[in-house]
Image (tube, rainbow over all chains, first blue to last red; front, side):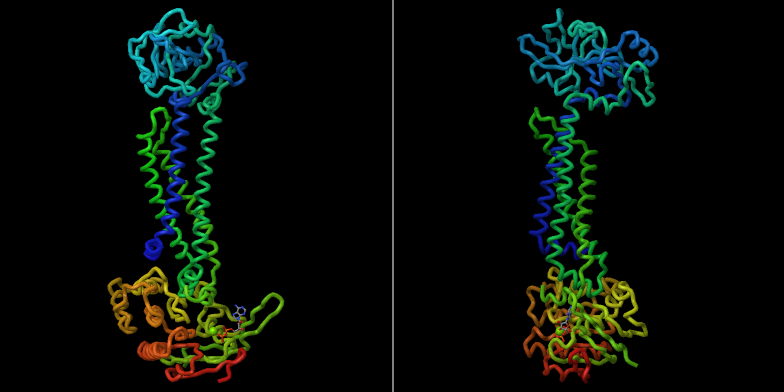
Length: 343
Length: 225
Ligand SMILES: Nc1ncnc2c1ncn2[C@@H]1O[C@H](COP(=O)(O)OP(=O)(O)O)[C@@H](O)[C@H]1O
Ligand SMILES: [Mg+2]
């Protein structure tokens, strides 16, 4: 495909423009999907990091977890039948530090299990983001609904819920703060979670989408990402279309001397491939670099899985765009070109 | 026996309602090692018969016999293959590929013709061909830096590098001054003889006829000899 490469070298400006546009669009796409992922992590890391399994809510809760109350008898029975299961509750709230500064947290209390931090009453384990607010191990925290005190036992990484750091506390303390005896949710890990007639059950994905704002947030960001992908495909189609129109004469001559139409397509594909590969390499590098320079408070989390997936989509979309624009090349008559005169 | 025969070829163009018969039954045979020149007034159908013979457009009816097969009965792909391997073309303007050097233009033609020889042999053949057309010293030049006469010599080299059997040329000297035109005609005559080509060319320049072996005159879609 020397001819394709030679053309790119000779008309650098044209291809550079196309390349820069593809670069900008794909860079923006990576940044936004990094942000989407980061926000989703920020919103629901607590739930996202759980293994695949099944969540159960009481039937009268109507799929809203913070209205759900699981009957204590039922809970006891389920936990006995499923040794890996855990019952847990999540509620938004506040803790006050020694200087009486208030920090918003998501309180999480659970029965003993390997899925969440197990915390004794009077103790608290916090998401490490609270370290930046000056909280240290051994600090004493209070809550205005709680008669006792919490001693900070330690920190855990990446435990966020509804954009707030998670605070793991003991069950009895939780029951005191929120004045409920029942837990909200039961989670049973594993593929073959039982159907329980007394409770509604949800997959991990369904449960995530039941978190207020989670699906709305993710949907709008993902929509932007897919629009950008479609735009880049259209850019390819339009750009190659315009270049092809300019090159009708050239294609005609190449056909006249006997070049196959497929060779002309290969030329277009090769150019599309080179431009996309270079643009993507650049935007992958830069968006990975961005994750290091992103401001602290900005939830940015771009996984390589997402990067490869989006890159493959860009390639596919570029290929389709370039191919659609190539359909006109198929219809070029060699004679047209010859009669058109000097190019 | 002639190398290439056109029999009773007609061509009709339809412009909406109106059908116009441009070729009204053309018979023509070309001989190996000879240049046949087609002359005649503008609009008499010279280019049309040349491009039909060259497989660049279809005849409305008639036969075109090349090496025993009727090209009018071939598929698109078969005609393309004949164009790529057995035909060479020179047009009024050189139609070189703007982003390839002189050398690369010829290499491209070898690639299109799917020449089986080694890259080294191909390079040698290109070198020799460029020597023949006296363009060897400009082998790394791009078309934009060549003069009209030089471009036309490169176009001739490109038309012949893959050893075609038939060379089609439509007013190859039209864009050149008399001196350069004569140079190109001498070259065509010499190459036709030495490479045992069969050459069909259109011209309307009387002065060029001294370089050709046979002259055929067309008028209103007929051959009038
Ligand atoms: N594709 C076409 N459609 C309609 N008319 C055409 C087409 N090609 C050629 N003609 C007509 O055929 C006639 C002969 O054209 P041409 O063969 O180019 O003449 P010449 O080369 O002898 O000057 C002209 O009147 C021209 O307008
Ligand atoms: Mg003509």
